[in-house]
Length: 459
Figure (tube, rainbow, N blue to C red):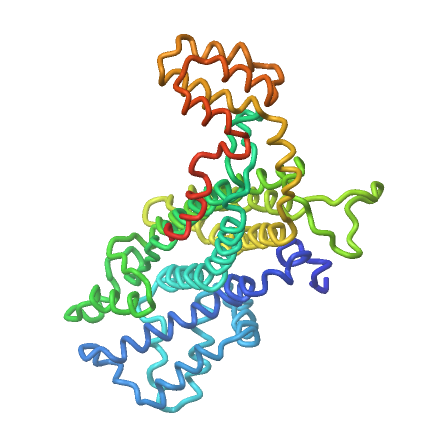
């Protein structure tokens, strides 16, 4: 079958492929092969540069430039060549080794040293570092910038609506008013905390042989400080060196990344549902898009589809991420192969994150607060002032303050006049009486506006 957007099995490569081009190039099979080439080249260069590894002399500047270009220029065409070799070897990392030997063998100066490609390495030495580099690039180039856009968009909305009073709902019932900006600031604060946690995950790697003890390395060159060289290579790739492993790097850091993303997604899922609800209440009105259809049968509809798509894809992302976090750190004895096939879905997990986050961004761009609708609900919710009234009553020792307000307001309507009559007969200081009489559901927002504006301090 000719693969294209209509025949792709995964919607990430099909229906939504045009939105995920950056992640496709990083996390695809071609992207993985490219990183393997990067790691193999880095190891070969490190061996050549080590003064105690005399079997491979120092490389000339032209040979170093050749190797660097080989890695830098590696693209889909070269990846296809590697896959052609793999069709014969039935081993993906060995295919990379053979491809590199073919390329390097074209230079007379490198031809005598081809056996030092993949020297003393196990496949997992190459794979774990490759996946760490993929995760690093995916986070830095694609996912974190997308989170940054959500953060900036939400902060702009926070500051624009810091003073816009809104009726709260606890248990779905009317509750003490807040401001729209403060409610959005809650989301920003949560997201920033989880985003910091994601950035703090140490992306680790190892290159220490078949069971993590440098067995083959020491058998060949016992005098060389192999752990030091291993650390140099890993850190030279921009990763954190893990000195204690079996054949595999234990993948704890992938679990940490996955769990951090799950928490980010949970915050965003919570927000997407609330945003959907506020659209339903009319607190947010949706901007019309010319030519768009909301329903195949109901012409009036403008659906909050971006928040719905975001919610759905956040669920898919977290299902994958939670499995990755639970599965990858577990391996029988020194290794089994279950991690290899599971890791290949990292790109899908990242893809569903990016897809969901992009949908939420589009949803945010299409909504605006409806001030009249917000005001309407506040005007009809004078019962929320029972809280400040009974609190002032208790301050001044009025007996059964809570119970009296409960009898007045619970489960029944109350308006400005009935509340005013209740306040006027209270035995409290006149200054407090006047303050309560002046209070409205619109003004009873505590420090919500100040809290909203303060979000800029919590970066």
